[in-house]
Length: 294
Image (cartoon, rainbow, N blue to C red; front, top):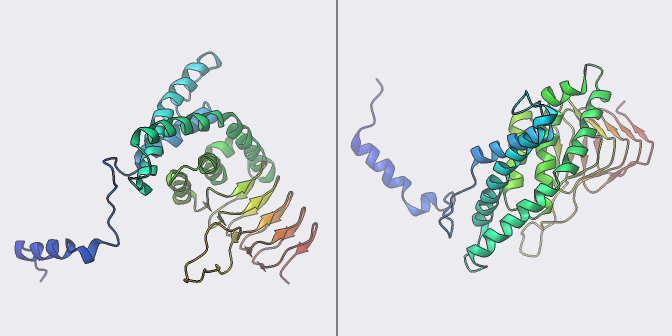
């Protein structure tokens, strides 16, 4: 027989959950009245930016050249206002109330949002090269448009190229959230700090991990399950992890890394190398080398 939770028991549970020792490690209260960043608002931000970057594929699918200015202007107007508010919320998440006034933060958020908007033409240019890499690199693709609309690599890279520009502008928290949105959708985990060159393609994609300090060159192709990660982390004298150091691989131009390969540490995979499936690498690889499991 299943007993129902009665009022006395419910009161006991509430009391236990309200004990400071119970919630102190998982409770967040900002120093200001501004709420947490909104996943819903950030989702709308990315969708509006996708509609601008890939007009006709997302948002209004009946857009014409003569209505392009209206379509792009309307989306960017809303996206800018969303971004300013979310930048502020991300800053408040970490804010020490004594740092500076909220008016200073609002002015800074507007400036950062404007600087980000100025990067959109370059973001579109880079994504256009990623689309071409996906189309050329996958015999199953029937058109570049198919890769825009369907491929997890393009979803992940759209999120990443947006998040990376915000990361470079020192935006708090928001780039990581945008990156994790793509991770949830595609299974591709790219830290917003990773530097990725043009014509980049992740075939299939599921389970791919690219760490914060990775540097990836032009015309690189990865397959599913590839990890570009770090080895053990150095600690300071107090035992705390030392953060901010370069700890992930450098992958030079024209490299292919096949499924399941794991490359760890600040090693260099030389230009034109081919890394076979399920290989474990903790050393640098010379340019043009073929490293295969036998």
